[in-house]
Image (cartoon, rainbow, N blue to C red):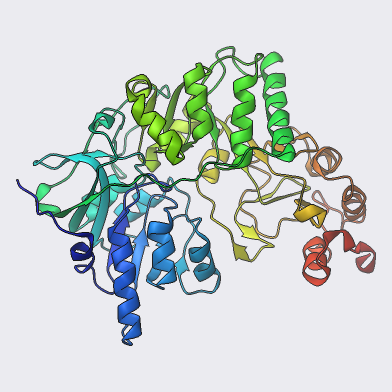
Length: 497
């Protein structure tokens, strides 16, 4: 059937206050570039005239300033899930202007299908191509759009002229059945394909095609600083030790890596290692460093939910797409992050922490326990199901006034039951086969900054007894000291004991 071409403004005018809008994409890749900006303009106009205007916005993960940024500045978001990373939205969340619920990324699609979040009015899908019978070649990020497209009453397609039609074949669109009919997901290697290269939708639901011409706008990561380089070196040293001791199979295992400068530093170090074999990745996001690893042959295949490349690297990808086409597969989030598949493949998970405590708990989401940073993302999906789960962070932040190793995390996202290894610039703590007190000494002696080790040992040695000797009165003294004096080194445990 022939589809109706329309402007982004015309599409936005169809969306009303209270509607639920779901988008394609996972991080900026695949996210809308145009319609959302005009929704923000409508919200600003409505608010100026004294009328309410907010939408419920569900995505694959974070988006970009063209979605979360402009809509947040217009105060146009009511509910938001499952993940975000835009400063303007973060401000709205922490001031309760947006009802944000932080979800494991593997769960969002199925919870939508189960009806937990109500009906979907509109889906906005970025595409490289669409056929008259509703077969869509998606962009560089998939996210949860197979479910959103199936549930939506109406669909807008943002047809992006920057996306080559030759992306056809790089996607693997698979949606599992819901209980009690669900079967195993037949992925036994990261390179297995089990679904369709296109997203198939009912063409009658496509109410308009909006033409865009824009890269994703992902900024290049800054060059790793010395702390990030040291963390990367420590992670690789640990993997080399595990491999050479025989605790990893000779074929090695697939890797998952989180997002950011530390993650990029780890990947670059892996690319330089001559003591580790070539490897595959089964992950949720691949960054610029992974494209380099694929070019060098160090990474032989990458399964992902999103190619989160800087604009320059995205251009390089498109120029050489014939080379990368059979080395990358892009999947929906509930497959890329699926616990069943992660456990089966034996994925080694590498994620970052805001802070870790001396018994192995990790806070991934809340600064000082109260202010949402980004969200749990896929770290829980991978951490709880990995062959080995690694968390890394700098030992200190803000010039040393914050210790990222604390007596007790101020917001628990991952308990000690899920965390195997903690790595900082100071060293490596192997928490496996250790009781809580043994873990505490391992973390303090190997991962804490020297300025904080005496304080942490003082806390541990004056604990309240029991298997995990926390002092409930003193557990947040580091955080209290920072809030009161601006420096965690001013923590005073003597007043509690």
